[in-house]
Length: 399
Image 1 (cartoon, rainbow, N blue to C red):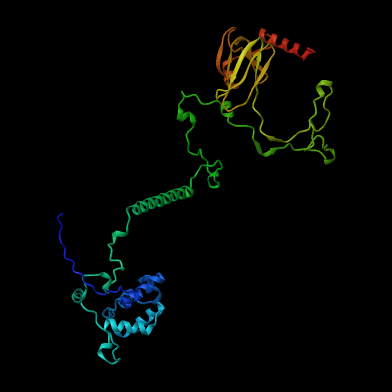
Image 2 (cartoon, rainbow, N blue to C red):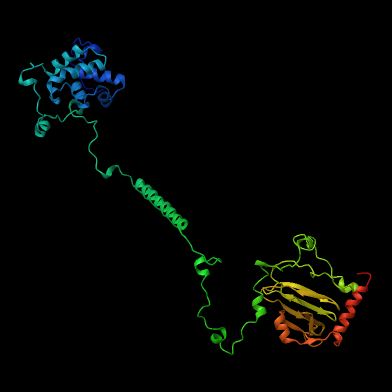
């Protein structure tokens, strides 16, 4: 067996292990440990003791050159030692021993304010090793750029907020403009200043403007535009009799209309004052237009807007009174020879020939009087049958 012979030199030296107390503890290590036990950072100590964090770091590093005024070093060290629950005098003595600092006389030049060294001097004295051995404050954040704290999402949110504010402002302004807008609409009442002026003063006659060939509207057509209106001043009849002869049942608001019995009974009215009169307070109504049938005939009456207002098969003796409207209704009948019109106590007609259909015939009194001729009820065959049918209807006990 091939082996290598090794020579082992044995140094029998009595080396005892070191205990915890054998290590040398510096003032900065003790202060950092106490501060760590309290859970305080350099900035926390600065806020509570009102001492710069750079001074606290210089105390822990035993660097008196970091202080601007050497006369305040003793007070700073003792205040920091009390804050850490340490003996102030022993802490200051350890600081002077480790840093070589000594208290100068108050009148000496060393007790005056020490000028800050230049940047070159500080760079030359700055160690390049452990950062904890320097008096600089690495915990202080370095200067940042102006735009480094702005996030793109914040810019987008700001733009959306500005757009929303602008939209709400524009909407409110538009609504305010609509609310404050004033619209002038014409009114039916004539102003007081213009009521005394004649609107037709200096206007040429209608015949001159339109010419002789233009047909002017009929008076009854224009009359349909109006309704019976209350008079401004009632029409009264003057009386000529003593007050004692007045009968409240015949005159005034309590007057009751009585039937004319003078012709029925053959007794003449012997009242010296004539029949009782009632004041007229409304305009007289226009003449009525009645459509009568002498034979069975289908009829349909439409209003000006096209709606059907009457449709039936009229039998002999039936009548229908046309309503008074602004525009005359129109008639359509399947048996034109069976329809007559009663106007102003006269009969006109027939509408057309027997068996013919008539459509779109305006039911207006003036137009019908111009289109048809009056018919005598005693000589016309159709009206004779109409009178007989009416008489049979009156005498029929079933009616």
